[in-house]
Length: 196
Ligand SMILES: Cc1cc2nc3c(=O)[nH]c(=O)nc-3n(C[C@H](O)[C@H](O)[C@H](O)COP(=O)(O)O)c2cc1C
Image 1 (cartoon, rainbow, N blue to C red):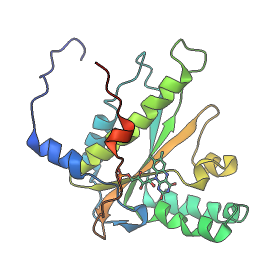
Image 2 (cartoon, helix red, strand yellow):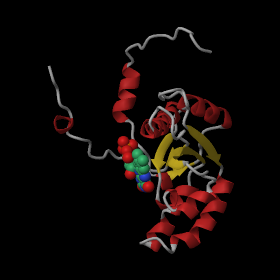
Image 3 (cartoon, protein in one colour):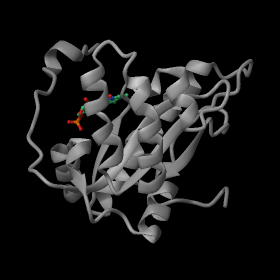
Image 4 (cartoon, helix red, strand yellow):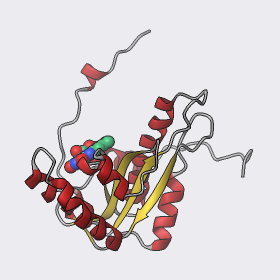
C-alpha cells in the first residue's frame, strides 16, 4: 500500500550490535537448517524492500533449490576446464552446491531510461545486502558470492540469465558449520573525509 505512514526509526541497541558483528559465512560451510519456505518468503519480501531510483525494481530473484544447483554444477564442470585455474574453478563449485537455500539476484536494468543503468545496478547490489540482513534477522548465516560462473557467458546462461541481465550475486543461506571469524575492516580515517 502506498501513502501509508510508516513508523519512524527508533534507536535499537540490538540492531546496532547485529550490524557491528554481522559477517558473511563461507558458502561451502553453510549447511542445514536453512530458511523454511515461510522464512524465505519473508526474506525475499524484506530483500525487495530496497531503494531504487524511479521505482523500476531493476532486479529479479531466482530461488535455486539443491536439485537445480546440483544439475547446473554438473554442467559447469566441463566449463571449468577453460578457466585459468581449472582445479580451483571445479573446487569452488562446492560453494554453489553445499548451502540449503540460494537466491540468485539478477540485475535487470532498463536501458535508455532517464535513471542511469549504473544506479539501477547499484540497487541490485543493495538488494543483495538486504537479503543477507534479512536472512540474519531470521537467524540464518548468509554469503554473497559471484564466482567465475557469473562472468562466463555460457555458464551464466545455465542459470537463465537473459539478454541485458547480469548476475549481481548468489545469496546463500543456512547454518554455518564453523565459527565466523572477523576479518580486517577499513581504517575509517582513510575512508572518511569531513567538511564543515
Ligand atoms: C559482489 C561480491 C562478490 C563476491 N564474490 C565472491 C566470490 O566469488 N567468492 C567468494 O569466496 N567470496 C565472494 N564474495 C564475498 C567476499 O569475498 C567476502 O566474503 C565478503 O565480502 C565478506 O564480507 P563481510 O565479512 O562483511 O560479510 C563476494 C562479495 C561481494 C560483495
